[in-house]
Amino acid sequence: MSEPRGEPPSGLDLTTAEWGMWQAFRNGGTHDLRTPYPEQNDPGGPHTWGPERSVRADIVARLLLSGPPASPGRVCALKLNGVRITGTLDLSGGTVVPYVEFHNCRFDQQLLLPESHFTTLRLVGCALPRLEAARIRTEGDLHLPRCVVSHGIRLTDAHIGTDLLLNQLLVRRDRRGLSIAADGMTVGQDVQAEMMRSHGELSLRGATVGASLSLRGSVLSNPYGRRALNAPQLTVERTLYLTAAGISGSRPGGGVTPPYGIGTTTPAHGTRVQRFECLGGARLDDGRFGDAVDLSQARFEMEADQELSLRRVQTPELRFLGERPEGGRVVLSGTKVANLVDRYDSWPAPGGLVMAGFGYENLIPLGHFPLALRLQWVAAATPEYAPEPYERLAGALRASGEDADARAVLLAKQRRRRETLPLAGKAWGYLQDWTVAYGYRPGRAAVWMAVLWALGTVYFSWRPVPPLKEGEGPVWNPELYTLDLLLPVIDLGQGTAWRPTGGTQWVVAALTLLGWILATTVAAGASRLLRRQ
Image 1 (tube, one colour):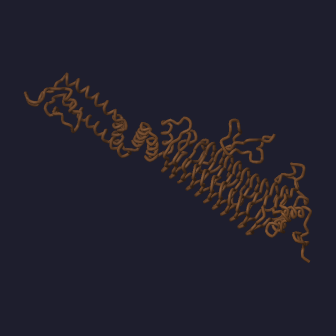
Image 2 (image 1 turned 135 degrees about the vertical axis):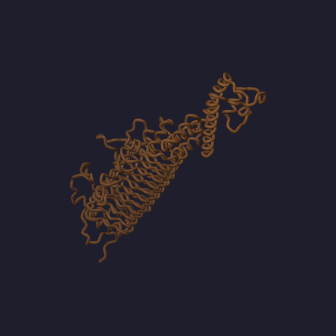
């Protein structure tokens, strides 16, 4: 004899809690088994949840995969609050049509969802040993806020139709050291993982996010491995936020108000702030970010062999505004940005920054960051001389109309290069520096020329030079004679008409040599400027 339509098969032997869940499913209502005592409703707490609050995982699976029809005028939905699920809930490969929502539930065993298909799945404030959901597909959201997951989450190659919500999630590592394995994951809109606590490696290799990825106020810690965040080839269509979160409310004991006490904009004056912290290495190599990478108020604490690696990242704006990293290195090799927004005290100490091939178009410093400190920044990133960082800085300054600062940077480059030359090269370099500052201060040549011309004029006025042939040649003019000696190539008709003797020959030779040196250094500097421009 068949069962009445919508009634559970007699062989299931449903408990009172399961019978209530069955009826709530058909009515689309919430099956709430919480007690009046809040301390007993914590899914991760020490209190025992007995049979009166327990349902079997296979009954839950039966409802979701092949449940009864809805009551007339209702829509089927599984909404559980304060319920314990015993056994392993296995929905692998299944298609779940009803709406699913678990609030404050306790799962005795791992939740198996690989290759399953949902419309929307929400687990809020639940405690579970592990979530296995590789290649899961959702038409809408996947929510895991305030959940506690003891042995990791796997979302490899998952496809989330709209948003992935992980706010205030606490997740610990699995046996491979991964807290969240989400390599190849695709999210249609935002990933919100604010105020999250991750103990292990958060892996997002090759993931794609259709809007923004926010880790505001989160703490990523991995004392077991090299990286706390491993996200090479990550694509975010808008902005990656590794920033502080403004906490807008608190409980009497000082904790965060549970439902999303997190500001998504700059905190207001007086608002408490929880900064983003990464305790371990972070890798964002080859990432593509459509709007910006924001590191405002971020804190990185690394071992000597760990890195904040941003190799070959491309983004319109990099906001390097966090605390000075503790230990490790910051690597920007090959990174390309349009705007570099930074502060001097956000960059690591000498030896902690690598930026070979780091390209930026505009500098937007915040706070006190004069040219002298900017040159120290370049020097700290280049323990061995390399011209490219100086030329990049000069190009950015010139593009913003700061030509004098650009010339100062290129002069600093030549002085740094001089230290790598042999003795003869150093001597020639010092001479160019003293005379015309490698051509970047051409006014010096005019000053030297004027000084030498005045000294020569005084000397030759005191000691006239006899003519080469008596009665022939121009009228003696000490001013023109000195000028003819100092100007190479140009002949004023004075130098060959007179015959210096004795000590005057040394003076003539010195003025001629100094004139050639000045002309040579000016020509070298001029050609250098022309090549740069």
